[in-house]
Length: 281
Image (cartoon, rainbow, N blue to C red):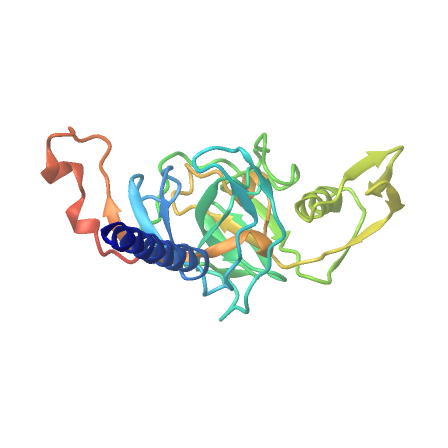
């Protein structure tokens, strides 16, 4: 009899923990998720060592698209879907998204321009559709300004100029028809490959998935992202657009902030207490 009671208690405990785990996984997948800030591209809006809870439901919760061993890249992709969104990202939003050049990484940047808008930077000042994009409260420029005449290596697209004098560049919207020409070829390559297509140029002809074409119809909305630390940010000026499929959410609150420069025993400086509860804007 005692053995049966012990077994029943064990089964009850297992079931209870299973329910707790399922609830936690469900919340993580649909409501909120924790993110750590690894780079200084958004300083001083968000600092290296900040731990942020992100809302996944604002832009439409995405079900997991990859299953594997945690903290490794061992796994495989699975089909996913997105729940209805409350709204789409807009100019000025801080957005958490999958880094287009390595979707295992999450990036956080500010959306400068959305689908159908035109982004430009003149002497460090961003413009959207010809209107000044007001610099965020904690935006910063930590280096000298590049002259207008400088063509910066690695800029996207190569004809865009440099980080401080950039564009103008149109942000593709779903349904746009992009026709092949000297400038558009880089845009088409970017958005087509983000949509999973194979892009090639052969004998001055454009091939998408092996089929020759002189145009491409954009399959989803795209966004242009920049870091608030304008001179220390790997962003859309260098690697291109963020498709809506890669958008994960937006920041909710900073729940912990870790100062990596402090000594491990110095608890008063190891944790940035004043940043806890901060809402990134």
